[in-house]
Length: 370
Length: 241
Image 1 (cartoon, each protein chain N blue to C red):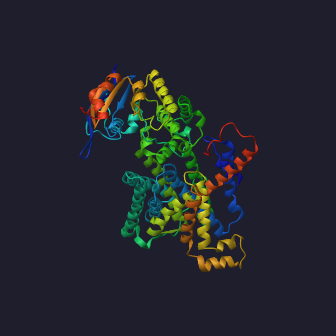
Image 2: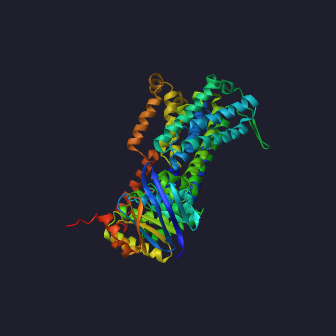
Image 3: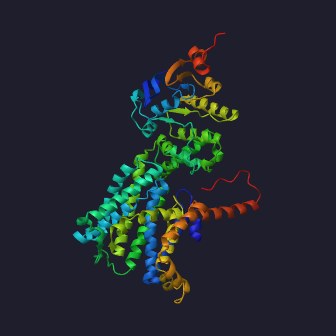
């Protein structure tokens, strides 16, 4: 928690304590499978990591560049499908297949970007939704390639062989580390974006595209660049997701739920921040998994075997997670427009201000929060 | 004075409306040219044509001898010509420093260099006390200054100011006037759109008057101010008793 608070105030540029805190958190999380190997617990972690990957990837184009794409299912699904099809049809090991999937999604993002970035604001959002829907319908229709609504079921995953070690993808532990690694990479990419010229460029476009244009920024180029980065990582999340659940069909991979989830994660956590998608993922995954399968609470030892809460959720709320999403978004948009992270930041600012008020007043007014 | 900007027979039509028709004039190196005219005369449209926001329907814009119509605004900026906006466009959720850094990053890839340039420019426009404020929270006078600082940070050879004094009080306007004159001393060429006649007479080496999209007059401020056509455009025809 302290690490979280500290990195909230991360100054522009490199900061050693924040970086060490980041490393420490990663290490701690990496130790989880050594402590508990209960499948449902590991499943929760994996879902959180995949959500972080998805949300942080969206954050690059949606949060920093301000282009609210609600069509990221296109890249997620493309990543999932290319990985699965290469494995099923050509026996390409998925760890290379994902690279092909990433390349494919980047190409797709260039095509979609070229078409949709001519539009701004709500029109762009609508265009991005329709692009993903076109691809979903195409995946349903062209059965020869995609097997349509039947979907693709994976039988076994070949082991990853490197000169140094061999990883067999049995059970949940390898997926735990793979998805953790992916999440860490994407969070780091967000950090790099925020602390580079690219980040300034993206944010300038988000704040005012015309002003950015007059200051020597090419908006079309940079919006496409942001989308490419975002699509690449969304695709890798999609590929890993497909391998993990071992089954995809067009609705799972290209469905609008996938697109909406990426946006929700960021809205709930805090758009355009590094930690926002992390916080949002934890909240959203906990909520949806608890509602869908409250048994994990029992396995985690948080609730007793006979818990009436678990029984109640199972009996009455098991299909209500979409309803809860809706309510949550309304509450967040109304009361915490900067997400949970914004609430936290406001709270720390208030504490600081109160502390400052006790001291003699400063000669200059306090600067606004960053 | 060799011309740095040549505007040759520029016309801009929106459907049947001629916002600019056949406007020609030159801007000399290091000169301040005032662009005036009644509302709707086509001043801002001309700015948009010069800086690449609209391609002119007809005519050419030459900057440093090279034709620039058809270039995008970012390319024009990199060539050394930058404009400010009549309706200010602060990057609201970024700090004042970050705003100016965005301008500075047009010339460098290093954030450190950009930060240095930005601080320098904030000092030039006297905004250094607002460095870490969010740009969206500034009062109008300071937003206008921020607009100028951000434009200057791109290291332009030519600055187009679109009503930087609009909405400012006397003291603030005076500050901007002194700033523009200081920049002139440093050799910066400027084209200034302004409604405040007293200010524009003081600033300009030459005035260009637009009316209904056409160039009405051009010349030294004193001459233009007594030009019969200009007076008519601003005040209407004299009524015979």
